Amino acid sequence: MLKELCKRNPYSQGIIFCGGGQQCEIVKDALDSGNPSFSSAVLESNNVKCVNEIINAYKLGAIQYILVNDYSPLHTLHQVDPKIIINFELRKASSFLKRACIAKYQSSRNKIHYISILDENQSTTYEQVEANFRVSLVELPSNVSEVLADGVNGDGDAKTDG
Image (tube, rainbow, N blue to C red; front, side):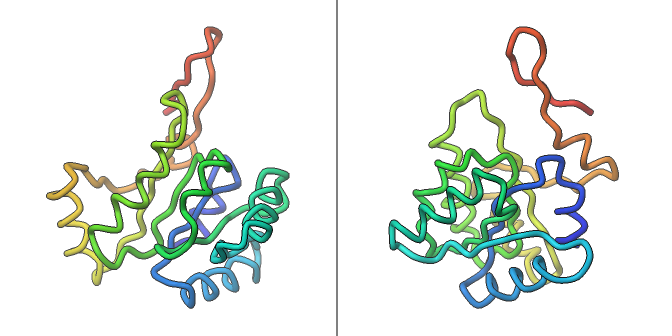
């Protein structure tokens, strides 16, 4: 499911939240192998040089996906101007707010799409997210690429196609 979502991502880049460092490595191996493959890097260090290397590679398009978890230096992600954030696994509802706060560093004119991959084991967690944070989770439509694609009209205002 994750690789299919990455394949349909109209921006070809994004941030993927995992449950922990080991899961980041497993997801990285899965993304980097097979066909199609997607270049990725795990953001896990507080070492400024390592973080800057990953962010610069992402900005240049050399990395398609930055993999993070709740212990990654999330405050640095404002530098990448993400359009897509994928929650691969959410272990507790309180982590949702921490992940969503990336948007507070963005311009109000920039739209970030949050996509969560749910399985049966996470349904209770997402029910808590809906109740606690007043968000509504909806199933992705079959035309997900069109729904996620943002355009700019003549007056510079962002619009969503689809």
